[in-house]
Image 1: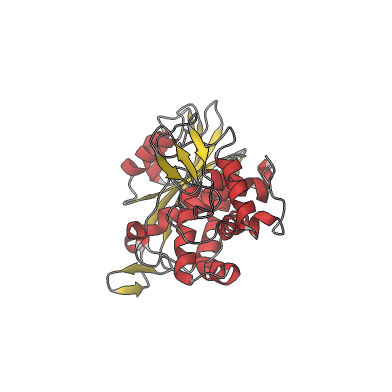
Image 2: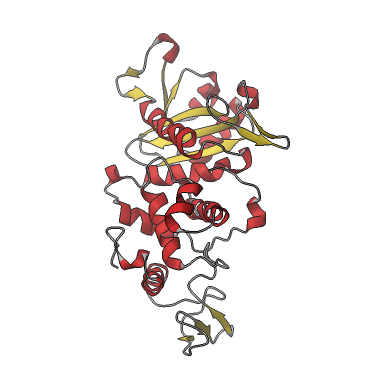
Length: 316
């Protein structure tokens, strides 16, 4: 299938071209009914009243378009603007604010904010497999997101938070030369860290962490556990380091501080989906902007996110 190479491609300016492109991405082997999964009795509907892109399924007698059963469903935003939104968010290393989407796409700020969250939902890994294995290194580190340039929103409005107790907690796992996966947790204890690591990392992996006591227990259950002691100014020992995961956090924090600026705790996991997706499908792995965009669009299938599910503004 053809992959758009730049922003001048018709799929980003013409709705019919965008629809055909989306259909080719979603149904490469022929149109499939998103209502019942039927294939053999699907027919294209003709007629000016319906408009292009409507189908009828003889198995369930349902009508549908390529929007149905995806993050595009019930959206009145033209498809070519949706695809442009996907392209902008997939290719912007530190993110794309809703205000910038609003100005670039010519849609309301509220629509741009809602679109951005739907795109983040499409970027979420629907079937995450354990990382590492085969004695490969997996780096793990934790971060506390709150003050130091961030604000979190509570029932009383926007407030600066101080101290780890008031911050959102994130655990990130990174394969060297591979994927990143970040999980927002309610507390940062050895028990919580153990549960996250064992659920996301194969036990025949080399666990790489700093000197934190949080990792001592789970480290004993892995193939090996190697640490570097940052308090002693030790950052690399042989091939043991946490430099890769710290590089991930550097990009994430610059994006949250410089682009998004304000983030509610309840929506933080979706921003983590976004940064994980771009990192796991980066240029260093041979994935260009067009291919990354196509992967994000494919992730839109089977996901629905209503305004009620994430009411309240999360970020700029």
